Image (cartoon, rainbow, N blue to C red; front, side):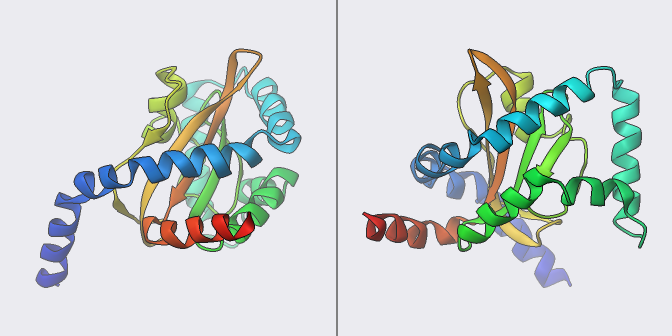
Amino acid sequence: MRYIYVLLLVILSYSAVYAAEYDKDLNEVAATDMKGWAYDDIVINALKKSNEKNADISITDRKILDNKWQGEKRKNKQSLINSVMGNELSEYLKEIHKDGEGIYTEIIVIDMFGINVGQSRISGNYWQGQQDKWVKTYKDRSYANYIGDLHFDDNTELFQVELSFMIIIEDEPIGVVYAGIDVEQIEDWRRRKEEAF
């Protein structure tokens, strides 16, 4: 157990450097792949509908829903989880995830209030309002891609880098698209892109 703990500390201590080496590649994934499917009508319409629906939900209510989500992950009855995982947007994201052939560890579309609208797999949180993937983009009104450090994700049980950006319609941000990226798959992803042309 001690060996595993030490190994994780060593890996994580180099995570920022390791991720920085892949910044160019990750920005390319965002520009040439993610932004292609992220602006599909399915995503845009779902975000607009969610923003309207959640306009009056307080931060306290968002936290209550997040707790409900996390509680449902440990139960057979999963009404909230099923309502998200079974919607049209999530079905679309599951296909994108599958078609990515390993580059994506998870995909989440998040509305302007930090609430999950759709996702490719069950996420750790329903409310992303305290997570960097949403804070460093939508909350900070940053038009740059957010690229996190390489880390071990408890939800996907994989080492991944967080990559997210705002969805902007008519000069107004309406939400965020986030994907966990398996950086070990980037070379294969690039090769597939080159072979497609």
